[in-house]
Length: 144
Image (cartoon, rainbow, N blue to C red):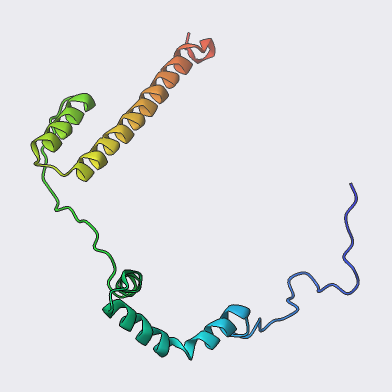
């Protein structure tokens, strides 16, 4: 395998050819924004006028930019899960969602958590079984 030699005009490794970097505002996007910025007041006036005359597209654009959409929130709810199996706990969560005492989003989150817990328990059980098999299968571990 051959290594490539850097051309003689290349910058040394770890050294930048432009240590200060590009000046802020010198890119194409910044130039475009500067060109548009001088017309923003006029554009806004026309959008407001169009919205007031019934242009729903203009009204929607203005409202989306000024008033962000509301996000649904769920109040925390207490749920006492039984000490039984994960299946029993999952049934308890589903019953609470069906009864309306627990929001569906919270129920889904709890069921996902129970699923993750089940996977962790499976991994622990597998690790315990492997350790037991490794301990039994070695004759050199036995003491005479």
